[in-house]
Image 1 (cartoon, rainbow, N blue to C red):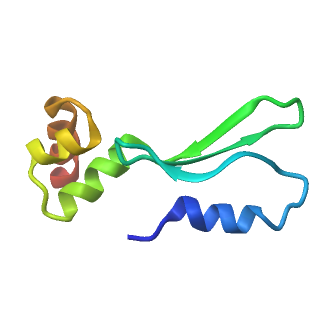
Image 2: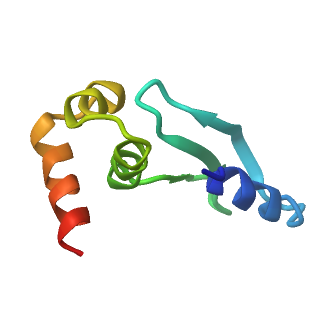
Length: 88
């Protein structure tokens, strides 16, 4: 799966006036994020939703229990995402 965050980061780099809090990173719960400052120096976080992360692991063949452990979210959350994915 492509690093959409990284792709967007690469596109954002053409704007020279963007100040980055940090480079793109991946948290231990597998969420990929980048943070930037707005013009008033407030922090804006751009990242994947946890639902997208759960769907990715489920699509890769991980069980609901494995996905829950990897993304550090309750089994009920992963089950809900799994059920939504299968009803569409």
